[in-house]
Image (tube, rainbow, N blue to C red; front, side, top):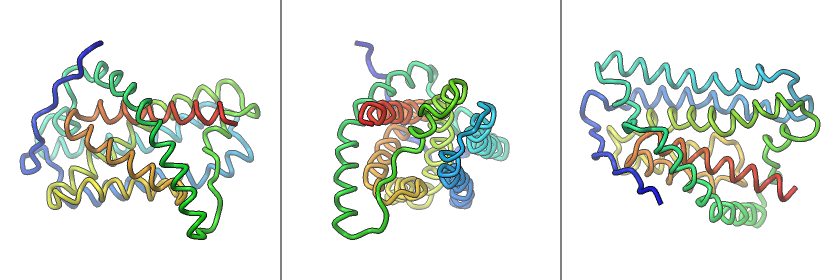
Length: 241
């Protein structure tokens, strides 16, 4: 078995590569972009897009904005972009290793999802747990090219874009002023913006794992972990439907 990559040294939240609290606020605003596709999913499910380019554009927009924000931080501070993003020397290898970890982590998180749904029902929270919108868009009503584009978004663009927003920018920005609260706060924001109270608990727990992976091993690790979870979640949904 290939050994796990060595952990990065503890990040410096006071150095030139450390985002500050105002940048965390900006990152939170950028994170709202992720809510837009989620709000549009019901309409997309009713009338699936006919062109893969439209799907890819929707996935690229948040990632591009987040990368631009990280690039701006790098230019202003003079810190290398790799330092701002916390990239290991071999990010591809790290991402593949943590992809497998994300698949394994999905097993207990799916159990937490069932518990979260039961708690919401017991508390009388309105609404029902909606199916994964990606599963709807990957269904028989869409073209093969659109399905392939949706898989690319779920396994590459969304993990990279969200990790740029929530870990490289939001988490590190909060940690500059609130080191103890940064991890749960950024995790709660991540779970909240997925707009699904029935799945808040597993998403919150996932975000805690992603934050720990980012802090110890960098962006490639958290993005790989995120992609592995998405892939396992999609596969479970397809098999259970």
